Image 1 (cartoon, rainbow, N blue to C red):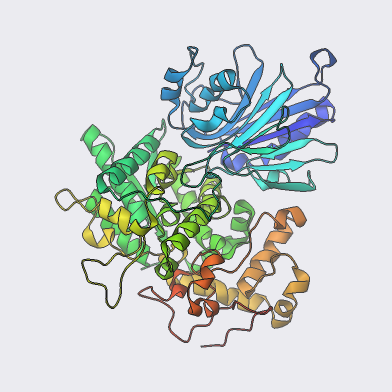
Image 2: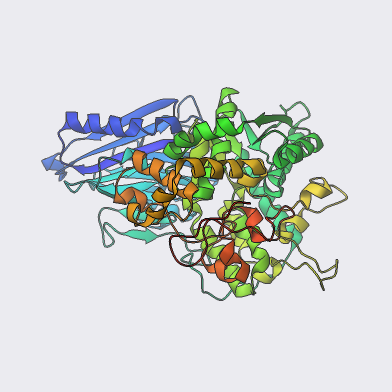
Amino acid sequence: MCGIFAIFSSSLPEVDLRKELITCSSRVRHRGPDWSGYVVINPDANANRPLAHGIAHERLAIMDPESGEQPLVSRDGSVIVAANGEIYNYKELYEELDQPYSPKTGSDCEVILPLYAQHGATVELCKDLRGMFSFILYDKDKDLFLAARDHMGITPLYIGWGNDGSVYIGSEMKSLIGECTKFQFFPPGHIYVSKGKNAGKFVRWYTPAWAPELKPGLTPPTGKYNADILRHSFERAVTRRMMSDVPWGVLLSGGLDSSLVASICARHISRRSSAFPKLHSFTVGLEGSPDLIAAKKVAEFLGTKHHAYTYSLEEGADAIRDVIGKIETYDVTTIRASTPMYLMARKIKAMGIKMVISGEGADEVFGGYLYFHKAPNAQEFYDETVDKLSRLHMFDCLRCNKAMSAWGVEPRVPFLDADFLDVAMNLSPEEKMIHKGPGVSQKDTKIEKWAIRKAFDTPEDPYLPHDILWRQKEQFSDGVGYGWVDSLRDIAEKEVSDQMFANAANRFPHNTPTTKEGYRYRMIFEDLFPGEAAEKTVPGGKSIACSTERAMNWDASFADRADPSGRAAGVHDSAYDATFVADSIVGDEPPAKKPKA
């Protein structure tokens, strides 16, 4: 994972532009600590280039560490590219080009140069890319620049506008703070071009058949369940992410998603050679937490070289401000889950590991969050999964990418592979819905993520222990230890007075915090990222167990349980009991204070 940054159409003199370029780009150097590259293009009236441009790249060397420095430049010097991410099918793309191309480097991202030569600044430039990416491209001959972001927003990207009309584009918001009064997320699955019929507009290039604009409300797909097709598709998604020229491993929480990823990696490695180095697996949690126990069992079953890290409540609490600074959000759930991941990433990097494969995205694809138990029908289930996927770049993708990249570790997420999504999201939602409880026979019982569990339930050649394959969903912030979330609430109760919280709507009129914990994070965020543009990059709305607001209407009990923890949905084996009342209650603001137990 790297950091990219650019300033286009700047009126600054060359010396000042280069200084500005380096200053802003250095704010994302944690993403790419291995090397820095800068290119400044000066104005040239003879070339019809009235303004200056600057492109920067902070490199994390994973593919071709020897010669893959960026920005990449075409052979004639006319096209410059700075890219973040991985293009997993780059070799196939080289073979499919209309004109033969001999790469100058072993960088997978170099394939963008011949693709641009073939397709130009159009949506076709991105349609065949398979991976996670955001990139910036400048064409000197046309004085044209463009930027693009992957289909799900797995890699972060922001765009802003300077007072002189310049355009700033960067991997993280911190590179734009203080330089742009207006900035925003660069929307996933879109391309932005400076010239042409859609100049200055975001144009969608990712238009999957199951939801061409990633919006709910369409007729749900009707695809029939086929365990073999689903299993083989996911195995391919995982193995294509194993390409690396540096040491790598897997994140292993002991839950279904990460365990399946680890199992496929371990099986694939063992088939290469018995002498091949063992797969490294990593987990984190409080002492005795559910994830540590489950992950150890999976690691022993798979034969990985396992590394279990524990952290204390104090260590987690001490890291909160740094975490908010790195992940750039005040969303409560994201901060809760990012903190242990951030602490783990530091340990992973200290071991010399630069890349890990993780299990994010499965819950959105298969309706794995526990509140999906209450989905009233297939249409609602489908709409919720589409909505959740469209918002991943603001939540789980943001968390996973930025928490790991804070220490120069690249996370890869096979559940969000575009080809796998075409298989899994074209399944009828009826094939994914949860059926359990009184009146449902054991034969007809389906728990959350039944479809993917069943696909890997092969007793004759098991991928996982049976109890892990069918383990109940744990949200990461719960699985690391239930005491973690409770301790964060207790800290907020001490630091945020009743008077402060009573005036929350006056203090924070946009996305008013509905809990003291949320208020505390908002104060830290505002201190680090001041201004209206920054606060508007974080979505709001009521939620139960990570739901959208739509799902709050699925069950009457949700109104009193608007809490991000999976235990709030009322179906978890360790669910909050009937006396639980959330800090935020759907209704009037500010919310009533939760009574002491």
